[in-house]
Every structure is written in C-alpha cells, then in structure tokens.
Length: 260
Image (cartoon, rainbow, N blue to C red; front, top):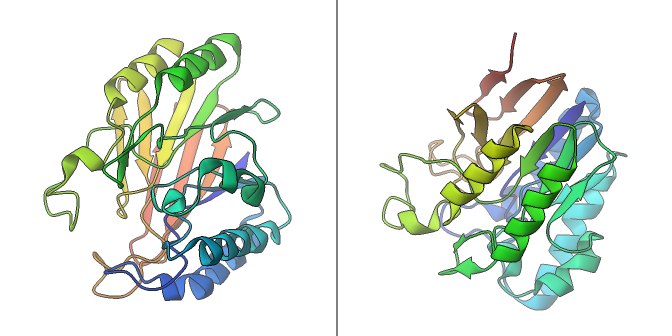
C-alpha cells in the first residue's frame, strides 16, 4: 500500500511563519510528486487553512480538497485546530465529504483510522481525544483482526519542544492532552503499525513501546528553513508490517520501521 501524506497546508493569507499565500504553488508540487509516486490514497493531516471568515474558509477548504482529488485517488482528511476556527465540525463534514470527524476505514489493508484531536479543543491550538471517541477506538481495535495505521492532527508521542517557535512556551497545546491513555489503548491492541500526525510544523519520529510515531512538518511553514517555506510532505509505503516513510521538502528525511 502507498499513501501520500501532507500536513498543515494553511492555505490563506500569511500568518507569522505560516506562508499560506504560497500554499497553492506548494500544493502543486505535492500533487506533481504524488502523480509520480502513484499512491492508493492521500491523507491530509489537518490545518488546511489559515482562518479568515466563514465564507473564505469554506472556499479554501473546498479548493484544497478538489485539488487533491485531481490526483485520482481517495482523499481523507482529519481536523486541525485552524480548520474549526470559523467553521463547525458539522459545517466541515459536507465540504470534506466525510461523516463524523473520526472513522475507521476497513476497506484498506492495513485499516486506516482517522482520529479527531479536537474533541474537545483546548486553548485554540491544543486538543484531546474525548471519552466517546476513546471507547469507539478501543472497540475498533479490538473488533478488527488486521493491522491499522493511525492518523490525527496532534501528535500522540512525547517531544522535546526546546527551540520550538511556539510550543516551547505552550507545551500543553503541542500534543494530545490525554496521549498517555490513548497510547496505552494502542499498545494493548497490538495492531498498530504506525501513528502519523502534524501540528508542530517540524518532522520528528520516535518509537514508544514498539509503536512508531511520525510527526510530519508543514507544507508552508518557514520557521526552521531560513525563511523559505519548507514544502514538506511524505510518501509512505507499507509492505506487510514494514513501514517506509520518505519525507520530501527542504528538510528531507527517511524512516523505516518493521522487521527488515
């Protein structure tokens, strides 16, 4: 299975180091790379827009989805904190052509689990996984027999935030607030191949109790790339229980998790 992943597109006006005005050009670069990669599906890890007002946010949300759909494969979205700045989850559902903001897609192998880390939001930028979603996730992982990939906006691992432009001063908004409980649930299932997130605008990887956690940098942020938009995205290849992640952009990385 091959999956294209992009995070923190922030389409819209520039905001601090988020060069949202460059998103259309950078998204073209991502789409060109995906045409060559030939993925089975695309996953957008949230923060698609820099919020302005309801009308503009709707337009940009729809534009991002339509452009990604032109690749010709299914496109899956998770909710980021900026996505719900002016739009509710109910308003976003038809724009993204998805039902509730968390889901398990059984038709894929491995299964694809989308989490909603705005359940509820915390101090605008942070978030957690609510009790109803936790119960649902436990059931999904227990019920299914096959492996699963987890995708969400906020990271579930522990990160050293020293030197981070924003989250060094706001660590409680960086990762899922109840992440230890969520990780415990994932670990007990024994079925999680890897976990992918965005939000922090830098790329990191860690393995905690046998589960790989990958944080993907932003497509447009320039805080760690000398004022130039990072252009970050990933091409993920799954072979059995092996996960290969090739990160492109101004700060390329390559990660491999598995048995070989």
